[in-house]
Length: 466
Image (cartoon, rainbow, N blue to C red; front, side, top):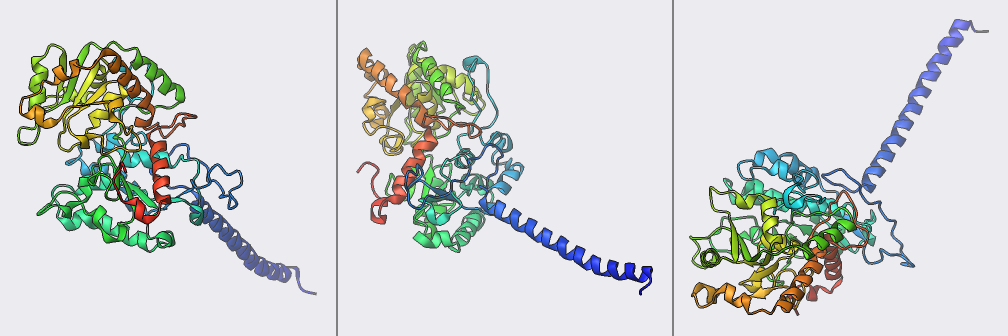
């Protein structure tokens, strides 16, 4: 018989290895669980309520998500979250970037003045769509972690924010580095190889011109993201297309200041602008472009100053009138027509701010809207807007006010009502909330993307209005 001390020593020697084996097994199980959980999660730079992943119904029987499933690439954080965390480094190129990308990309909350009693208003930057759209994707009701069942694949690369970080003071190699890095990452993925990227889409919240540098001789502006051979089949959503539907970039609305949280936010706002007093017959918010011989801004501003029925807010260097969202919305809510001459490019964020206020836009170039936003604006542009050829204004042959005065009051009222009806599809809802029945700009864009990627390849490139 062994002494008690020897028995205890032998028992302890046996129990210690058993303990370590059990602990190691438990740790392995926990690690496996966490890895599976991470694979099933939807990545995002923002916290907030995210939609649950929907198990794909292979049979499609009674499946509301049939043909609508979206898979989200789990990109390394250098392509999105790290860009936001490094916002302070871009302060010399985008002064308030850190503030502008807060609140899920919506920026600083607004209240008071024209917005008293309203909710869902923010000082949203016109180039903040990268973050806003990604946050809305996280809430999309038909997300799946089964990429083989997905109708479309979202690539949450913050191309617009990355552009801002390297637009000035860098060479072309530095400007293109992130885009080339992304392309290398994508083409190695099995999801990419399935369709050569034709079912992939990405949001670049700037104009398409900013991502087609080599399309212009001796150009040093922007990146070549859209021209990289590896990603030529992708769909890119931008706030102004450079190709008018003949390329792979398609236009969606600029972000406005209004981001409703509920259906009632939208309906209440529509009621308010429908009953607003329109003190000004026409108005303009913007600055002249004296260095651009093609611009008609100066002529439009001169005509506005000469008319007691026109009001304008100046945005020239040294003035700040047009940088206060409340002032802008007060003017647009009290105007019948809002003049939209092109500025740095054909389209304007002001167009959408004005329409959200119930103001009828007046365009001077078809590219300002008619050849841009096919998913969000009616094909018949006469139902919601007025067109006056830019050349007739440039030569001084046309008075803008006189042309607008020719429109009967009943026709004006009908156009305004159409603009007010369009408001929901021109705004991006607050991604931390969920609209129930109202379809916003994000919903309309998703419908368009899913329709486009389902088309045969030969039909994906073509004029918007064919």
